[in-house]
Length: 150
Image (cartoon, rainbow, N blue to C red; front, side, top):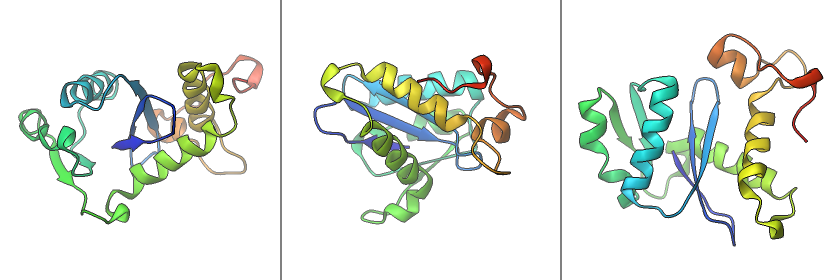
């Protein structure tokens, strides 16, 4: 879990399942602990509570320890100045940031862009590689006429 910083865009909280590479990303009004808690509870409501949650040492993440512990989730803090210790989230953040570069960010339509990016990421990849959706849900995402969202 971490933040994707893209100039002139609101805060983007990125949460990734390290096993399936399924990405959840949220446009957030701020980087407060309450905002992060709210988004985590949304993810937990859909997918259940993970056994471990890795984040950097941002103050908004540090205060979540008690909540996560009460839910049976172990909070792991990535090493400072070591992006590799939170590698899955760092890779997901780079995926989101790279995909956003392909959109006209002056239109301020970030929510739709983010949905398209996530849909295309979770959908089948080329070759025999399993998509994040198939890894996580054991089925492919159903798409209209087998086309990605454009």
